[in-house]
Length: 430
Image (cartoon, rainbow, N blue to C red):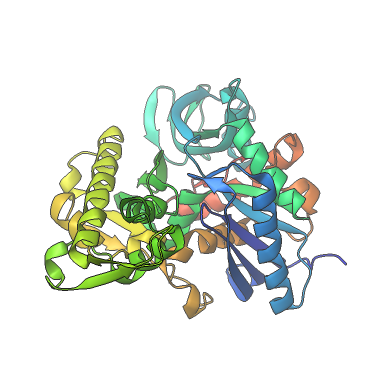
């Protein structure tokens, strides 16, 4: 049975869970979500696949559930990727071949991401995205859309995101092991940004901190384009693990305690409030002060905020106190976290929720679903039913798939950057 041509799937393979969303594209900018599922995953550590078989099982379980709910067969999917192995480089490249016809055309710019990806490839790194940010014509920089201009010296400034080939290969192996072909890979914080940032925020400048299970992914935008990417190796797992280690309680118990009782501001908790915890190896349960648990949470939250601040400084974003910061991801809901960021980092902070599209069901309008919803939105922009899954993605080792992704990428660029520049948030992924 073939997958319906207008049906596509988005898979978020996270440190603690796998989330799959299946939708049917009904028009250029419309879709219906058919089903979604979330299952636990124990195959990743800090965003990296460390157990291919465990990851494969989680992906297969999630797919089985959505296939049953939607009553359809899924054979390919858009898949998110992140992890500490991800890095970036902003670089200038000469594209002297552009304008050979006497004037720069859309076809010229469509070739740019693929050329940049190929020229920026390095031994030991896999190019995931090559995203044009601006152009230089005859030495004049800051040009957003050079189409129609004449020049013999065109250069492009690109945001090139790379990953470790071994990490990317393990993810693809797990997905394919679950019986699914990879349509394309997409950087997860890039996807989250699609779900929670407005075009105005991207244009004026904004930062997304996607606090996931094992990592916090940070991306920064200005003038409508991404220009900074980084990963902080702290996420919801570390908050839970702190409680588990401190009180020698099972991780599952610590997770429940975190979700039900944790807060970054101990003073808001009553002095006599207590929490009962199971202790590994003991039959008698332990009663601890809720304020003590909140103090543990507060210290980890303060560390996370400090690390985010360091990333903002690294991004040379200017006055950190004036940064527009959007917190998203499951751990963004931690009580008190937004207030802590507001008080110690920037007053321009909000929680990002994927609610900007009417077709997104209410149950997915939560920070913890920003990444899978963003992957879906990214895939919907790129989806071309006539192209087969085997050749349409930026999958490792497929040059044809890479070029197709860049071609699609540019079509979207014209929509996201004023004047028709490519907001190619797509590039070649693995």
